[in-house]
Length: 415
Image 1 (cartoon, one colour):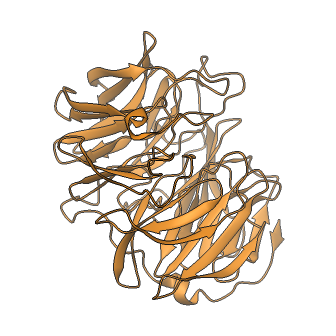
Image 2 (cartoon, helix red, strand yellow):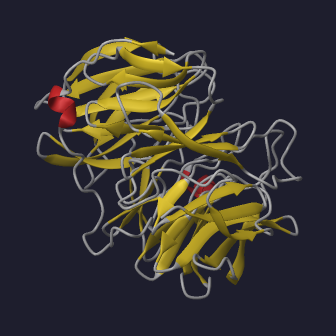
């Protein structure tokens, strides 16, 4: 394990602005990466050490089909996407028992050598659930029974399916549904969440869609939407989609991780050797680069911010703790755990090895890689593509750890 110095967090210690309606209780996980899209669970009182053979498995569901869609968990319901009978489905389970509540077809199935099926995570808002399939079908369904309220497609907004399918998870903000069709009609679109009608498209930027998801943020006192494509990071006016600022990012092949916004600073990372970049948005919307390096090269397991550091897996380096203020390494660990996804809960990091299915609990510490417990997913999916991995991110909510490997969904008691 490598350990270096810790830089004071400074501005990066500012709390992420609240982005979701106050009516959403903290014990819900209504969308991709949780309430604030930051990979943080509000749970407390979790186990500090798991039993030797792993935490108690409360239930396992075996018929989710193919795909990497994660869960949205609200009001005791577990929503995700998958496949059945060569159709993409949205599925509702009882989050406490794993019992299937309903299932609804919402499109054809994306075929891909790295794994068929949907990639994005549903978003729950009030009585409705919103989805974007790998092939670009958008749906709004009733949370109670899955009945379809409206449907549209990215192709109607000039979008074309990226190489590995649409992987973005839609954002609900007030009356708007935000997503990234990409293309010459405007990279980002805002729809009326009640009807699916277009409110605006960001015609000042025409980049093709990649695989990242939008975040809403307050920057210099003004609300905006932050997104990224293969070569750009940018902010949009929420009222009309006007481009507020834009800067380059040296992305390659696939740009996937969600941006992190802290105050007036934005941090992004990507794999394929791209590295990471931090910028500061000035009051006049000019962009100041703080640093750009290859310490954090995160493919698609995501990173989480805790205080003045980010934690995640960096290609070629291993699990990494990085200072946000200057991009320097705090510590790294290559041998103990393979590449994978991460989430944060109750002072701990839950990390999932995408290749072998090892699930590890780490102390969220700047002192080094501090492993507290581990277990291995068992059984593992027999329908996973030969080139695919366990890419669905772990989720912790209401004292439960939820994991997915294709058709198999697992629920563990960690409280």
